[in-house]
Image (cartoon, rainbow, N blue to C red):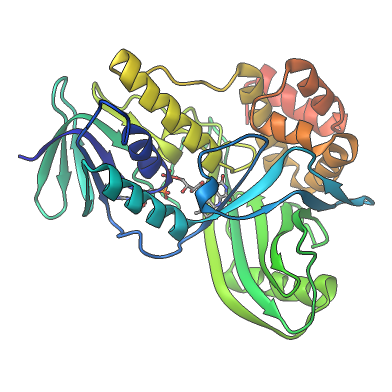
Amino acid sequence: MPNYDYILAGGGAAGLSLAYQLTCVEGEKPSILILDLDNKRKNDRTWCFWTNAATGLEEVYYRTWKQMWFYGEGFEKKIPLGDWQYVMLRGIDFYDWMRAHFARCGGVDFVQAEVVRIEDDPLQPRVHTRDGNVYAAKWVFDSRVLPGSVQVDRKRYHLLQQHFLGWEVETEKQAFDAEALTLFDFRTPQHGVMRFMYVLPFSPQRALVEYTLFSENLLPQSEYETALKEYLASVVGVERYRVLDVEQNRIPMTDYPFPRRLGERVWAIGTLGGRVKPSSGYAFWRIWQDARQMADSLRRYGDPTHVHLSPRRYRWFDQVMLNVMYRQGHQTKRAFTALFRNNPPQRIFGFLNEANPWWEDILVLASLPLPPFLGAFLRTQILRKI
Ligand SMILES: Cc1cc2nc3c(=O)[nH]c(=O)nc-3n(C[C@H](O)[C@H](O)[C@H](O)COP(=O)(O)OP(=O)(O)OC[C@H]3O[C@@H](n4cnc5c(N)ncnc54)[C@H](O)[C@@H]3O)c2cc1C
């Protein structure tokens, strides 16, 4: 039976990030196996996050923006991001970069296979694949997740989806402000749930335009397409364009406390380890930081347990926000408008990154409309209901 130091069941953002952090460290040469269903040779997604510091990912930045547009209820503004930037990576660049890194460092095997079972053991957990192979390791990290596969007890926890259809379009005439992304454009009918357009402009004639919803249920395919067509025609003002690429998926948004420990020597990482921020659906930056902390913990303590947990105040805010989206989706446009009207983006980014001093967080909370948030607070924190 092939034997490794670490096995990563799932080699997406989380599996690759952790393998990256464990390799090319002076004086160490761990053996690592990455098992994934997919060969990771196509551009299956774009990842974005915001930062005001070096990240170690600069080599794979595809685009960065220093300004953003916000279009809300009676408020629209092009907002400078100060010392922050909004960063976009392409999945394929990240996968290729990882492959090059592993080839340089050595010690990493990649096998394309479906993991069907992980057998826990206090010394040597084993991973079984569909083709009948069994691999052993000292530690196994599980990040196997497929769209729609996250299930939670819906009576106890919120489970919304961030679902979207994005078209990368090339227009005949100049239509986009390439200097500034559009983080939220609420100039699209809400129909009682949070819906907005998200635009990543690459040039005045090329952009990724994404119709995004935070809600419980998906839409029929034609509704996403109609919304995009209407937005391009009536808001962007273009009738003639080519769709170069399509991005569609869903991200689970839940307050379910995903267990990190799945066995004596089996740990959950990525989406499966609860790394998706429940109220925003952003995960990439959290996954990257988690991988750093986990690799450090393995080095210093010989186990992966010493990782950062979300401070309590952010966990309850996530619950309250999910509840507002779940029960009062029609209020979200107003709430996000208040958020961006009353706070500099740096404060909002710090809040969403769970890295603000507490008094900045109080200012964020004080800027939100009271009735929906107070109602959601009472419901989730006092009555313990969803
Ligand atoms: C289209 C899209 C865009 C997103 N954009 C952003 C963004 O802009 N910013 C952000 O912060 N987050 C974003 N996210 C959310 C989040 O960052 C990603 O979902 C991220 O990839 C999660 O990392 P992960 O490792 O948990 O899952 P994945 O990256 O999906 O990796 C899971 C891996 O497990 C593999 N797998 C599944 N089942 C098995 C099995 N049985 N055996 C072997 N392998 C298996 C899959 O093939 C996959 O490679 C986006 C998500 C999607 C889907």
